[in-house]
Amino acid sequence: MDYAIIAAGEGSRLAQEGVKWPKPLVRLNGTILIDRLIDIFLKNGATSINIIVNEEMKEVQDHLKKKTLPVPFHLLIKSTPSSMHSFYEISRHLNSKQICLTTVDTIFKEKEFTAYIQAFLQETNLDGLMAVTDYIDDEKPLYVETDEKLFIRNFLDKANPSCRYISGGIYCLRERGIAVLNKAIAADISRMRNYQRQLITEGLTLKAYPFSKIIDVDHAEDIIKAESFLKS
Image (cartoon, rainbow, N blue to C red; front, side):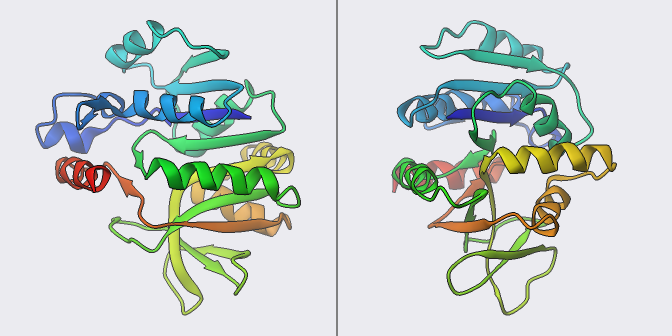
């Protein structure tokens, strides 16, 4: 399975709050964010690892260019207008029929991630398995509407009684998901949440996979929360 990381954001809020590292190089309990993801992917059957960073992130580029991995590693350096566009750019370098995409600042328990990947590999009838959590600590969460069997009905900006979870920023997808991505770009759709809505509109079979907690590192205080969470 191909793994991909979107690390193309500016991380401006962290810089404004005094964090000295660009977001992909933020340390959690001494471990660099992007290195942690790479290590976890290698433990979970990665056949390739693919990362996109923006053109201004020279420090991140230098860090990644020094890496030697036991699987094919592709580093794409390109600034894009949104995470959806970043996904599109990196998708053109993915060869597997099964991919896992994450944002660089997604913090989760490793055992839960392994169980998630195994569930996706086993549920071959699915077009996508989306990581979700009922831990809501996001400025603009994307709510996930599901049925009683956790099949996804919709992605919403505001919760309704059918929304137990929010999106966790981890996506396992098969070929049909990439086909919809290409169509979304051609139709000038922007933002990952609108792409996810398009997956539903196109009739893809998506299911939610609950994690106990997923933390996004958007602010300096999130670093402390994430370190505590990983230690617990």
